[in-house]
Length: 334
Image 1: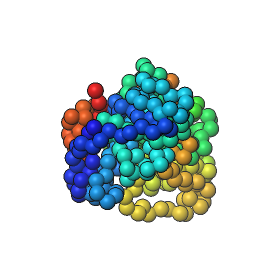
Image 2 (image 1 turned 180 degrees about the vertical axis):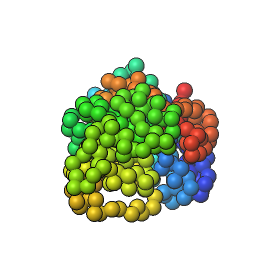
Image 3 (image 1 turned 90 degrees about the vertical axis):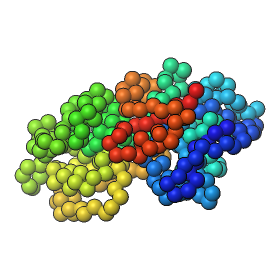
Image 4 (image 1 turned 180 degrees about the horizontal axis):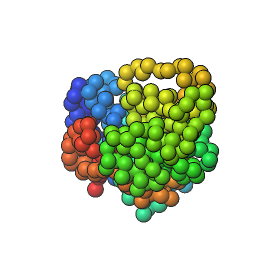
């Protein structure tokens, strides 16, 4: 079978390897779609995460092709999504022994609801492949402890920001605004359920939030009534803007990766008793979000901007790593 691997700094190759042997407690999945993550570009740039070649791909969806004798509740032909974090041989596509940018993926010690989950056959594989990144978004949302009466602004209308928007609305949040610089992304945010959008290229964000969410209580004037500021953009200006706009008791959730230290106004945090919470991965959300994808798959489908066949995986990786070229690239398999 074929596997896309990092073979050196800045270099990837499709390598032929033996198809895995299925043990009694294992399941073999024929990969039908696998998303490209920003971390893949990092692994390529640094030459991988392990000695020798590093298999890529941690956002898979596929079809079960073989089932070990001791595995229950999973059958050949089932369509599945995968939890890459629990593989005994290391995190799939993140330094582990296997990656999902491959024809087949062995799920060791397969347990439904822990290592993989079945999805209905009508869900397109390229949408199902969003399960892993959408779990990242859902965990970030859960970290903010939202309640239905909250008013929210999501910074960044990329895949994670859009996934967070869908998650907030699926939890019944009263009002969700999305802020971004790109008009087409903001249009997509409205399509997936945002109540309002703010183009920060030509609008004053704080003034717009006050219009949308009302004024906020604070010892200082000019604060917005927004309850949750959700950073899915990763720009230092987001942190500064959120803290300058935040009312007493507001929450700032950070799921975006900030590659450089960001100066923080601790006086605003202290005087307005702002809660700042980080988010990493998905301790419990990997299959929680599956139910939401199944229920609202047409909305999630809007997040995928490009599908590229595995035969052209080099183009898919290039496209995903080129700033502004694509929002979400998913590699598809026959």
